[in-house]
Image 1 (cartoon, one colour):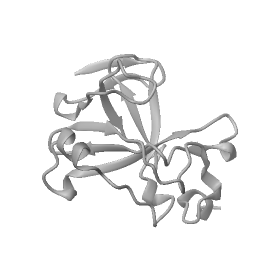
Image 2 (tube, rainbow, N blue to C red):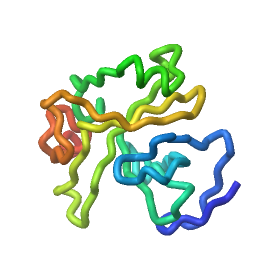
Image 3 (spheres, rainbow, N blue to C red):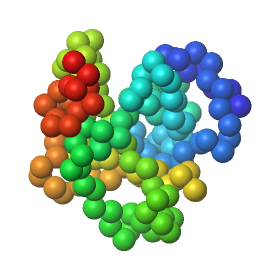
Length: 150
């Protein structure tokens, strides 16, 4: 399948790669279908591209690459809505904001995105853990793969 994106041109993807987020992302409740774009140029980041709006794409990263102690408590309700049977089915991402000056980048550790890889269902959850911020500076994280690269 093909989809014309604003930032990445024509995106080729397999229908099996579509991630359905029933409740949408925070602030984007009407946008339900996404694909993950992986590229060596953006590694360790991936791009979560909306298939409902060509202008909407979120840079995402596994939060454990930034903080090895990152913990996400998944409620029974979240497990049920994602159809999780095994912990190994889920992958986790945190939405990042990368401004013109990349040293000012932030990550939302308070609201990770969980994806059931088997069913390709996703859900962004909001954690109650006050250790995590919605705009955590990337360079301030203890295990950040970004700060170690310097």
